[in-house]
Image (tube, rainbow, N blue to C red; front, top):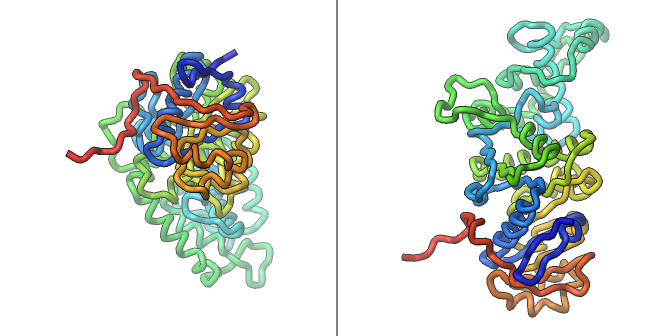
Length: 391
């Protein structure tokens, strides 16, 4: 049995602490990051697989960290992306818009890998029977395509017949295409952006010579899901994209969805704890059901994926997500509204508001009655969390 030491006198089985997911919450400076690191240390000592989604680079200096910095030494392989996943990067949310972007991506893959000609895949004047024959030759393994042609290809997806219904289309419905112009503008901007090119490992005119080797982050997640971690943990650093919250949400959701899919299909996966720091940054409330974090919270336990989220207040999380957590480590919360979302802790609201740095209440399915703790700091597990001081 793996135990996690939280104080000099209190330890708890990792199964009890994490298998029902753990929410660590508290105001800025209350000690929630230090508590997360203390738990990480216990898992590290026991050689348990852990993956950290790090929005600021705070965890990259921890000892024994394998750091995958997206856009630098790690990437998401664009060849593996489905059309639906790609559409999310460009802000397509309506089902009809997502379908058009996905069709355009499939068309470009056809053009490069089956037709084997440069340029876009024309649908105006193309017979349905010919198109279906070509589709039958497109295999479902990772294949390249020219993403710079997506805007032009997207127009072809609006090809409509006039009087010959054996053809995909005879002209482009420009009025319908215009409705996608906001998506097309974001698409054009992102595909030309050097950071986006590095994120997805797109072909670039100039390679970053300061990075000796770049690795597919999905491959790293697979390694940490299927092999003992050799007392290391994987830190996926997304700080290069912290200034674009929309893009950050897509990245984290995609990583979580991919990790869930991986652990659901592999037969020999290990228990994996996933820490998402400041998780409220990356939740997409508009479409919560398909959000990767929510899907792992709801479906991950059966696949051996256990979430540990940190956030400044329970109010930051939608009620549906909050309900997926069986255990809570509560640091100082400043208002009754913060505590009200956790009904079992309302009687302790005054105590919670008065907690000092590092003090916390551990409550949940396996912790009745709640435990009042002063979580210990592990000296060798220092991380960049302190706010700058006045001089």
